[in-house]
Length: 285
Ligand code: AFP
Image (cartoon, rainbow, N blue to C red; front, side, top):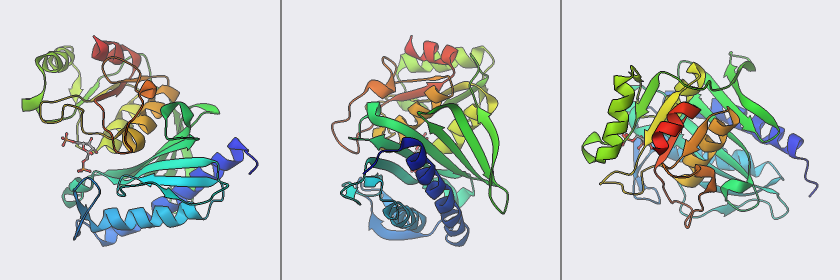
């Protein structure tokens, strides 16, 4: 199949925008419902998770250029078109445990040309379901993160987001009781400098908040209860690492660039820090 990256990404991003409206409808109809089924890592699946995954699977199947998909809700990846070029890894509904509280949740997408390796990422996107539906899009062909908002008729480009050198927000994930002393000191250091605590427990709104405000740090470190971190490389960490670097910031596991990591398994996790460059330097210390 002819590889025309700009056109193919346009089709994939349009499909993500269209799907966001169907998923938003489900969130409004099925708030907080659970099913008996469990996902591949044993989490109880909420009705909305299952339905969001089905919507995206069907939507990506309409694109000949998509070879394979890998969903956080499925154990294995699924082949869609033998002659396809791109592989899409996605978390159909991230933060579903926050739905009962009516807090914002999101979807996350990584678009790989070739194997599911960070060096093959050609684009990434997130959907944030809040008081409006917002879609952030990053492409290998363009700097910045294009942020679109649905205005009731169509998606309007609201702003192209870039990170400044430093920010004022600190979003420290994970159970503090299980943080290492080093991590505890890093977080205290930021708060002593006057950083504001902004953490909802939803990766998508928490990271979008830092992008919209132009800077800060989000962390989900290695903890004694989750030594390899909690967030998954393929569908959560690599897409947002791509997005933050596209916005002029950085993304590290505390030692190296997240986009240099190599997963051994589709559902591998990693400690992760995303932010503007000054905060990433602090995270690496
Ligand atoms: P759920 O999908 O179970 O709600 O978890 C959300 C999440 O994967 C991610 O969105 C958050 O950043 C992270 O977990 C929050 O984890 P902690 O509650 O341990 O900080």
